[in-house]
Length: 227
Image (cartoon, rainbow, N blue to C red; front, side):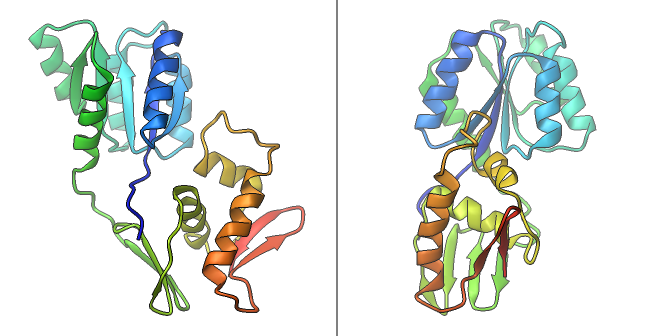
């Protein structure tokens, strides 16, 4: 059984020192983190990626945090948004909450409080249309974070689960190595490392159960395909 809950978070903060500190602390707590130092970069990343939560500083150099919050909501994305600001006036907090923010944390703050607020927001129930992906005798449950094959429970690491979920979500489709890197790792991952190959070796050993026909196929020069 998997005892973790992987989540991908974007932090929008123009203070590079604070951004680096937040990324380090939240990565150490098990989250996958991307960072943006301005509003333009933030909106590009949110448009290109599926994040589970955003941490948004209000005082950015190019686009106001309020505008970013409105933009995210008007685009239809429902990821929780935590506002970070040195401004503590109640009217500002009410305004941000009305614009679609889910929480408001006043600077300075303790990292433990931020983590607790993140966890509280991520515990909110989500409407998962189809939490179970079943292909042949392999069953992956996204909600419970479990994997079974022929009624045998299989333990996966966080990265292995992410890789398998992404591949099983598009069976028979060739998925490139770069696409897997962008989905499972953060922006700072080394695209030239052998980390995907190593994870694939371990993943195949676990899910194939010594059977002759591998579930994940390598397509030379193109990527990987499930089924």
